[in-house]
Amino acid sequence: MDYDDVIQGLGSFGKFQRRILFFISIPLLLTGFGAPATSFILVNQPHRCKIPSYENDTYAIQSASHQEIINRTIPRTSEGSYAECTVIVNGTEQKCSKWVYDQSQFIRTVTSDFNLVCDNTIIRSHLKTTYLFGFMAASVVSQLSDIFGRRPMLLGLYTLNVIVVFSIPFSISVPMFAALRFFEGLCNLASYQVAFVMVIELVGPVPRVYVANWSLIAWCFGLFLFTLLVYCERNWFYLMLWLAIPTIPPLVLWIPGVITESPRWLLARGRTAEASKILTKMARANNAQKKFDASKIKKEPDPGIRVILRELFHSKLLLKRLAIITSNWFVVSFIYYGLTTNVGSLGGNMYENFALLVLMELAGTSVIFFLNITGRRPVHLVSIFGCCIASIGSIMLIQFAEHSLYWLHILVALVSRFGISALFAVLYVYTGELFPTVVRSIIIGTVNMGARVGSMISPYLYDITDGKLGKMLPLIVYAVLTITVGLVSLRLPETNKRKLTETVEEAGQGNESQEVMQDEEHLVSTPLTHSHARKSL
Image (cartoon, rainbow, N blue to C red; front, side, top):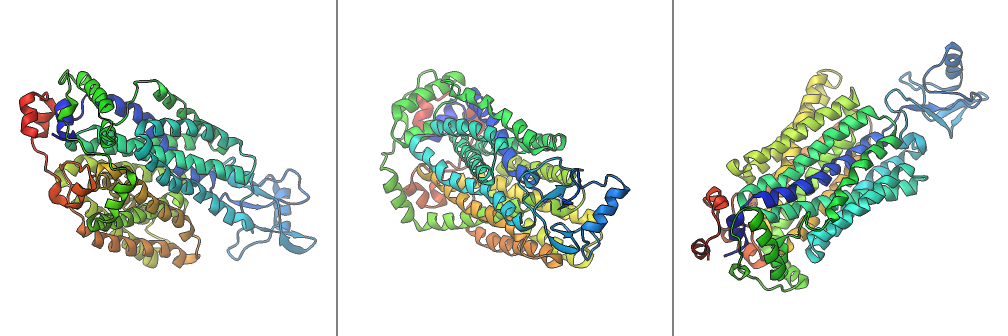
């Protein structure tokens, strides 16, 4: 009898698992705050040079005399707008060192506080990536949960996050802001990954897809909350404080017994006695078997991380899967953060566009409710090829209707967001099911490192060139990447309703090693009796 058989008998998704999922979901909501905040606090706020002799100069025109002074001292561009980086002093046009900013949409931003405009624009681009550099570091840090356990890592990350997010609004320099945003990104993604691994290890195969992707649903609700906050608060200082307050309640997880260690991880590490105690609590909470015999669980000796990794790198099948999945994560993150950080490039109202993208993300994530019917593989392939088609459609619109059919431009962008969100949803489950328990957290951290490379490159892609080509270039790259990765992904197997493999040896045998689960609903409600256990052996 293996671990999945035990979980089925004790309740695949009983009261015990639902309670832990509830407490983990609270901080998962917060992970939807950090990444989109970049689009608003580091926005390219409209600006012009401050008039040297005008002490109370503002971007908004105060009077006719103010307008006259502006016309006299601020040069015009070829398009007729005011120049952003130069001012006329004594009849000579020269660069300025002080600016005034348009406060019609944003009262105060990091851009305006640190004057990240003109020659300092590149600094703003770098700051957009510091949060994503934290994501890359998180891909390494989250792997430590395979060594130290899921619960200790979660508690440490939540505590550090509280300290960091409350410090960000009080940043007194660009390096300080960059460092704090780095640690915010690290804490957010690392806790998200560890929580994801924990929840899929607590439930049976059938509800696994719903439970694992509840973290994505929580992310979407966090985005909705963020949209409301950012619409109501246009000052970045107070916005970041509002976003920091919800990080306090998750500290309740330090209370013993609120969440437990993952029994599957404990068994994989050979800590059977501790796993038995937790499984007994699970049985009691789920009204299943009162006494639990840990000796019935098929035990695997713990060879150690080095031996496990050596086995992994000798498995050609798993290495091929790792390469394909990593390329998928690179592409999905590259496109997702390109669409997110450049929401202003869609035109129109930035807040309305962002709200529409969030709606599409929730709709795309909802595909999880059909994964047990359709399987993982079909949804994965349809999503990635759908993104390719949407990218090609956007290219055609820019080429032949750049300044018309605005609604169609938005519609195609929303289709892209739907597809990329659906791909994110299925990838989290798919990745976890393609690899064995002993390296699952390490694998998820590794593929997310590929994702972080994609996300860090994407903000720069929009700044390579201007004009029509500048708008089309990212979409051309999106189309090429999605069709390439989609074709290589045809080699991935279906994992729907199959048991998770425990060892590298099992996973290396291919899809045949994953036994198909049947009669899951019956097993959920049936206590693990002695006769049932014998049938499972």
